[in-house]
Image 1 (cartoon, chains in turn brown, orange):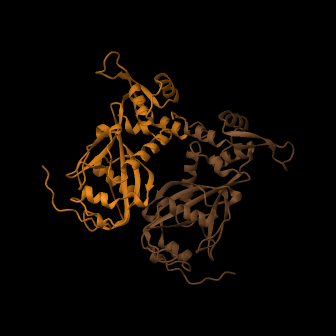
Image 2 (spheres, each protein chain N blue to C red):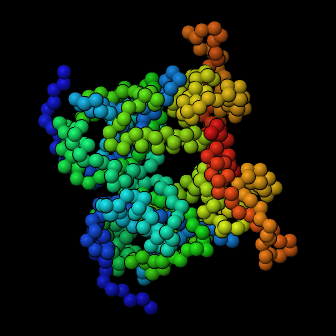
Image 3 (cartoon, each protein chain N blue to C red):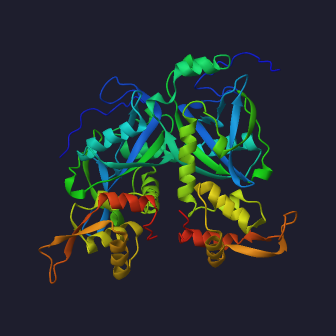
Length: 257
Length: 257
C-alpha cells in the first residue's frame, strides 16, 4: 500500500530539491545498460501508484555541464561513481510530449500544464557492471529495476524511441568503445563474452570464429583458472588487457557487425 | 567600406526576424562539409567589421523540431533544400561562452550581457555537393565562404572543438552513411573518390587496394565515359549504384579506418 504526499507542482526553472536554477526546457534521459546471464538489460523506473515505466532522467542545473548532470543522475539511480557514459543523441520533436496522455496517466503525480512546452532531452547511455549496481528510485517513482531488453514494456513519453536509438548507438560503437570492459565482470569466460556480443547485436555469432578473432586481437589474457559450478567441462576464465584493448579499438580492428 | 545599422540587442527568447518565440538558451551549430579538388572544406562566416570567424548557426523556434531548425539554417546559408544532415553531439559546458572575450571581439555587434547564460548547442554536420552551394552570410556576418580544413583559423566561442568533433563523427560514420553520394558530384573518377576518403581520414590510402575494394563492393558503376581535360591518360568516370551502396552500408562492409 502506497501513500502519497502532495502532488508535485514542478516549476520548470527550479530544481525539486530547492531553489537551484535549472536550464529551462532541457532534460536528460539515461539508458543504463547492464549484462547478466545471456541478456542485455536496461534500468527502468516505475512511476508511483501506476503501471507505467520510463527511463531514468533529470534536469540540468545552470552551473553544471551536461556531462556533470548525467553523472549526477546516474549516481543517484545506480549508486555508482565511475560509470562509462556516452552522449548519443538529443531529442527535440515538437510532439514528443503529449499533454493529454500525461494528464490521463500521471495526473495524481504531476501537473502537465506546468510543463507547458516540450523539453529538449539529451540522451546518454551508460554501461555498468550489473553486479555492482543498487537501483534506486527517484521522487516520482516507486521502484527502479532491471528489465530484459526483450521484455521492455511500452514506456512513457518517447522513451521507447530513446532506448531504440541508444541501442543503435551502442551497436555502432561496439568496435570503437571498450564495451566489454564495462559490461562484463572482471573475470569472464569466452562464452560469456560471446553472449554479450550476441545480446547487443541481436544475432547469433559463430563461436569458433569469435574465439579465434578475439584471441588473435590480443585484447584478452587467459587466466590459469576455470569457472566453477558449470556442468561438464569447466571453461577457462579470461580478463581484458586494457592497454591492448584500447590500442585495438583505436585502430578500429574489432568488427562484428 | 562597411556601414552598420544599429547594434543588435539580441533578446534570447525572441527571434531576430520578429516575435516568434524561441526555445530559451538553446542554439544550433552547423558544420557544412564540401569536397573540392583534393580537400575537404567547411563553410565559415566572417563577422561584420572583424577578422573573426565562426560556424553558421541559429536558434530553435518553439513550434519547430531540432531537425527542422537545422534544415532551415542550412537552407539560409547554402540555398540548398535537400541536404544530407546528421545530428552528432550537443555541447553544454558551463564555460563554453566567455563573456569578456565576446565583449572584446564583438562589442560593436552584440551585447553579451543579454546572453547572460551559456547556451546549449546542438551540433549538426551536413554533406553538400560543393558545386551546388551559393554561400550566404547571416545578419551578423559580412561573408560566408569555403575554407580548406587544413587552413581553418581560430574560431569564435568553442567552434574549433565543434568542428573537431564533427570531423570525428564523419570519420566514424564513413562506413555506415552514404558519404560519397553526398560529397562527390554525380560522375567522378576513382582518384576523385580516393582523394575524398583521404581528405576525411587525414591519411594516405593505397590506391590499388582502394580500387579493388570499391569495385568488389559493387557500389559504383563504371560509365562508358572518360574525364576530359586531364593530362596524360584520361581516367574513366563512375557513378554510384545508390541501392547497392545502401545495402553494403547496412551490412557495415566498407571499412577504411
